[in-house]
Length: 125
Image 1: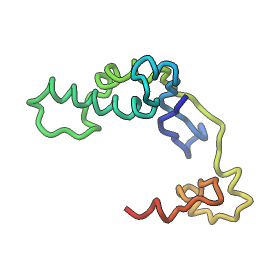
Image 2: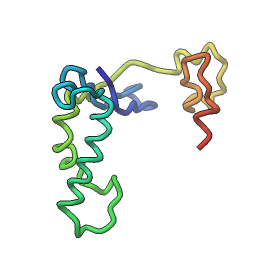
Image 3: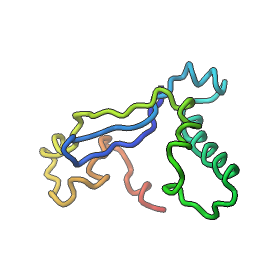
Image 4: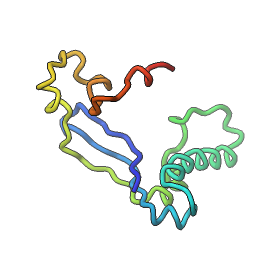
């Protein structure tokens, strides 16, 4: 199984995860020889492109301007199961012992869990 989604944090629910949990068995039926990540990432681009072709006179549109219901309707069969759920994961619990300054608590660099992670390589765009 592969999980692709978004983890929203810092609100009354602590954390909320929304995304796809596509299994390898379904992936093999859809696109033999490939992994779930390829399908999860590609289908959103394909759905947006399909919408663009059907609506070619709309002009320049940004992703957030597209009708997400229509794009998801095309994508969802390839993203099943699609999950939206609260989770009790709270990074602040694990950071209390690390003496991270409060103003840095919600920075991505504070969430890295692997001691050998090379953060510098990710920040060089």
